[in-house]
Amino acid sequence: MGGEQDHGLHPSKRRSVSGPDARDSARGCGVVELRRYDLRPGARETLIKLFEREFVEAQEAVGIRVLGTFRDADDPHCFVWLRGFLDMPSRLDALRAFYEGPVWARHKDAANATMISSDNVLLLRPLDRSSRLAIDSSRRPPFQASTGGAAVLTVCPLQPGTEAAFWSHFESEIEPALRKAGANVRAKFETEHSENNYPPLPVREGEEVFVWLLLFADERARDEHLGRIDLQALTVGHLAARPETHRLQPTSRSLLPD
Image (cartoon, rainbow, N blue to C red; front, side, top):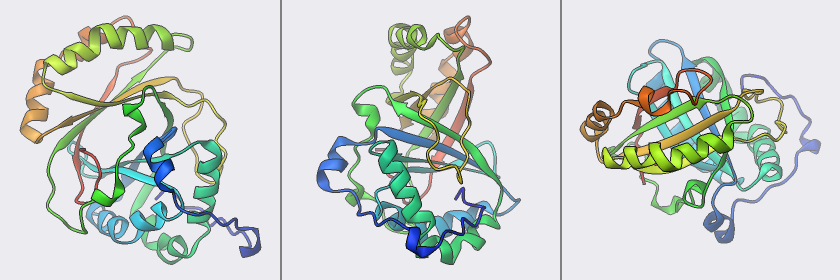
């Protein structure tokens, strides 16, 4: 869960936080965390069951939007998830409430026992209204429901100062090519430059990235799309390093694909 440390704050220092109201849900997320966990061999299913049974509603009760939870199709030891917040001050309040609250206290040892590393985290901001992912959490599937859909997350490292130029290139060249090849471009993000206001949970700092999320009806559609796209050709001359492409499969309670 990204909370290996025992924060050790006295209960009197905790701040009470109420969950998101309907207006906040409609506004979606102004800040999104993309979290990739490196897990111990054979531990992924243990973490997913624990996460979906204990941590989904507990986070949403304090204002965290649990947007998407995924298995990495190419790495059996990787769990990927996205969670959102209305803004940075809301993020601070919500993370304090969850990680200093009773649910995490009860289950943190079991969660952390599955992990090798949980600090591969990008702090992002959405680039348009649809990317705020204002998803109705009442539509969340029940525990251990059958899954459907598939996704791709692409992370593009940029040189500082090239963000606007790459955004323009994405809109004019990359996104049309992705859609033509059968993708639903669900969300686009860039680096959120605010200081990490909850230091007990590290994030990757000093990096400039552009991230997009693609959704598909199933794994076959996803893989056919990837076979049609030459991402190197679409991004050549625009990136600081090679792009990362992650094939993802939603877990049973994921709100994405939506």
